[in-house]
Length: 392
Image (cartoon, rainbow, N blue to C red):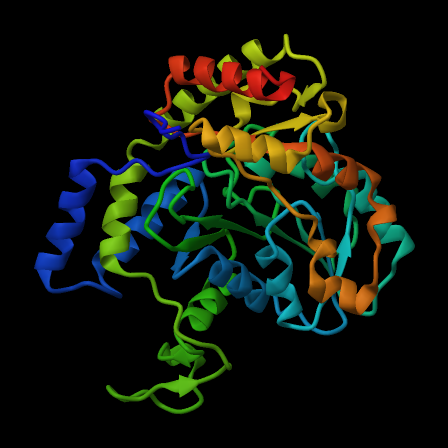
């Protein structure tokens, strides 16, 4: 059966002015490492309330750069959530840090802050602790409370805010302000709040971290006279670290600047859609929703429901397939990181230690959420989901 309209689980919104901004940069003759990149970095820093922002070729590169800047190494522990894309963990693994997973809170999908404190107590390390909280689906982790529980000065907090540009902490500061952390990473891939095609950024308030982030981005290449071992000449530079080329382009920055101007409008629209979903889904049995207490502080990136598929005598795969046939795209966020082959090969099956993550993963389903969606579309999606679940 041919469907009249297909609703993907997410998609970008590109306006004509976004396209014109990119064209203007292409016509300028300066398409990379130019003024638009610096303008975009400053705009994001100002939006978040941070001193510095450094753009990268991807969110993964940005996370890796943050680990580089923090000098993460073999004796360090990286404490994070299993409910994330593998890039969160891979960034630390590249520097031989040991990942330590913390179970999640099923009401938010975020890691359990109380268990982080326990982990710091029960698993001492010769190196430093690097905490990598992920603001899953845009719901902010309670970073202010996490900061209060950490007394060890050798503990570093690097926030993975790929989902959370525009969210606020309970303290009133924006995610990305680094008011309670050392660095924050954002992603600008095609389905994030704003997109630059691919791309990422790290914000920080510490000058030395900013310097190391820029060093990582540019092959470890140093030109600043204050860091050189010999007197600078017009052509002279030194390679101080092993890295690569992770530069962001000016035409990407132009696209990002246009989108950033509309970010708050897009966030508000998604909040309205989430509230509409909640109102309609609360009548359906065997469906669990995230709590709504963070709504006014959350820049929703995903809308995730937890469905007791067994109660409907369905498998998740069957439900996803039938929804797709009816024109509705869905996704699962995420396969627990510890379930991936690389981790099971090295650690075996550790799923029993994460009952909340396992319970969540068995029921998680992401429904369509993006700026161009309407309330009528939400009505249609919920009615279709209900018909698939009950077998109408």
